[in-house]
Image (tube, rainbow over all chains, first blue to last red; front, side, top):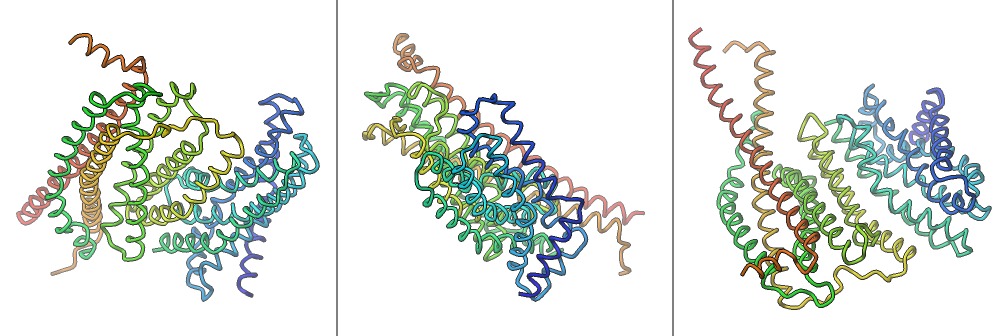
Length: 221
Length: 251
Length: 64
């Protein structure tokens, strides 16, 4: 457990040292959502109707932004090889990196979401559902993204390739995440959607680190 | 160096079997296609509801079947490549994905061409078409990833992991899309597979599906051969570079 | 004869949908075949050239 936590702490320190990577991600997120009213017009009813979907989609794009560097820096300076050789199983290392990624980008996104919900005229119930759904969904995004980041390590145009690989796999999270918000707005129970989001997270937790570890080993062969 | 050369340059058994299968597969493709087209376009009756537009089905449905079949071939080949490290399996997966992508693309476009007269719109966010669209994106990702590395072996390996991740995800995606679809539109859409299929329609349908399968087999052989030559060339070029840069040891 | 041909191509009024579907299938599947065959031929030629060239080069090297 000790090396696991040490790795999380190291990655977090690196993320925050790089002149606020998290801040950039959140700024992108806010800016992207704020653009929408300029595109569809400022009518409150329309904005409230599409707010859940828009905020979810933009949160996905924002989470994608920082994914490329998840393993890239460690790969380039050679510390990834040390991580692979360390006694800790590689899948656990991947989980630690995902946790750090989620803490440095997922959590700031969740914190920024209520504000954007207000701007987009989302009801209070909807905002609550959005925060809970994002809290359950964004870890899954980090985990799935780690697979894509590991597989594109050392690829030509890896940064462009990564969204192409990862976005189709994000669709289930998007569907259930938005459904939870819509259910809350229309007064329906949102529990089933949240349970499904939780199930996705539980399924991704063992599978994604395993696949990402396989990808990392290939990258270092 | 010599080991990898032998592994890729002399898969004699595959080449022998391929040389045997290729003329049969090509011949059967042409024959079955001719028969299927004749029965589908000329000899089969029009549908009592959809009229002559039902003839699009003889391309659309076999293409949809092939889209799924080729992806399962890729999945099995990828698992074989990862578990037993069989070099041929990598090549099969890599050579299959452009073929599968073409079938998926055909399925989407013919579906759209069928949907226009039947639904009155080119695209419907119908659960099936949406799933096929996502499958198309998975194919594109697989193709791009396998070609994204300077070392084709690394590309093939990364693509195998991606294909397996995709297979685990496909049922989840299918389930979520179905569920999303029922949530958002009440099922009032006429399904494309609506008419119960009569024998006079089933025969050309199956013939076309068989023709597509044979086409896939023939094309797979051609493409695997090309991939083999590609790796042989790469090895030869690397050897040439080594020979040029490293001074030859005294013999 | 002429009439039945015309009615065949008219496809009960659905000609604008049926024929593009078949045409596109022919173009895509045929195109993929052509591309694959050409790739195979180019690589085969390259391999032949390298193997032939290698022998010649070795012979030339012996002369020098």
